[in-house]
Image: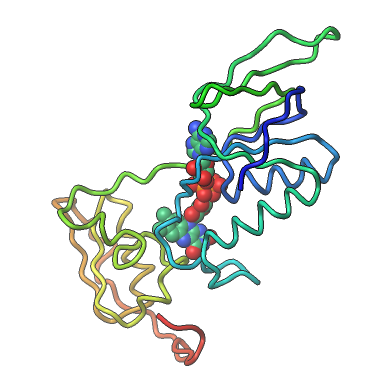
Length: 211
Ligand SMILES: Cc1cc2nc3c(=O)[nH]c(=O)nc-3n(C[C@H](O)[C@H](O)[C@H](O)COP(=O)(O)OP(=O)(O)OC[C@H]3O[C@@H](n4cnc5c(N)ncnc54)[C@H](O)[C@@H]3O)c2cc1C
């Protein structure tokens, strides 16, 4: 569902309707600002089955969280418009000198706002390993906090992308005994070796979610 773009100037246009944009819009709308969120519908975590590590909503599909977020923004009078923003430019200020911006969509529509909040997220650039992209968000994961529990006790390979990748090895090491670090030619300092697993007597908690 897409709301209509307002014909008159609004207080704020939010570019991007992911978690950040919707939360910003929610606060603006609750502060009685007229707000329009424009979203092209490609949140970063779209490939994931569920969001984890977010209290109350742990295990909820990303699309469901955003659906509820859009509903909450609309509850306070905010609008959520489907579309891609191609330009956001300064426009002529109001008679009393207040700033104005014109935001233009790919389909040629535009809206004028007093302020613009950019919440377009980021785009993951995946390593060029054949077949890897197809498993992104499932068998190929980037974050031990988001997906670590789901891959616990499985064989895990860490693909080094730089010297700091060793940190991933330490984090995922807490989740499995079977970890391989693919250095990809990036040298390890002496310090990080060996990757001994810390002893956590209460590490395994049965029944707290599936894989
Ligand atoms: C596979 C994966 C799983 C993840 N799992 C978790 C997890 O379990 N727990 C957790 O806390 N975090 C998780 N994350 C991180 C989480 O996805 C991000 O922190 C979160 O999505 C950031 O929200 P955001 O609103 O900044 O960006 P996004 O969610 O990426 O939203 C940005 C939005 O802006 C829109 N947009 C971009 N450009 C334009 C434009 N020009 N015009 C209009 N709209 C535009 C996009 O379509 C998108 O809808 C995961 C990330 C990935 C990659």
